[in-house]
Length: 81
Image (tube, rainbow, N blue to C red; front, side, top):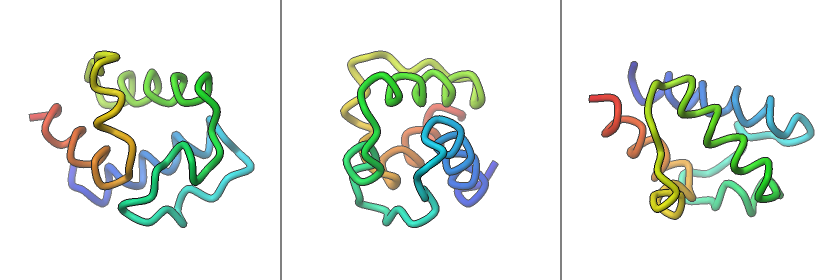
């Protein structure tokens, strides 16, 4: 899975969690939760959906590392290796 495919999957998962948002308009360094106005519960659901889809386990201590699209893509690429 390449970076573009990971981005597309992230957008699809965000759209499921927050259907009224436009995740494809996120810039690489935008704060995902702040920009899309996602509350903490939906943010947690998003992390769970990411873990299930990509087969990774994101510890709570890492939540701060995946705040932007760029950081999230990098994090997933590192975890999937």
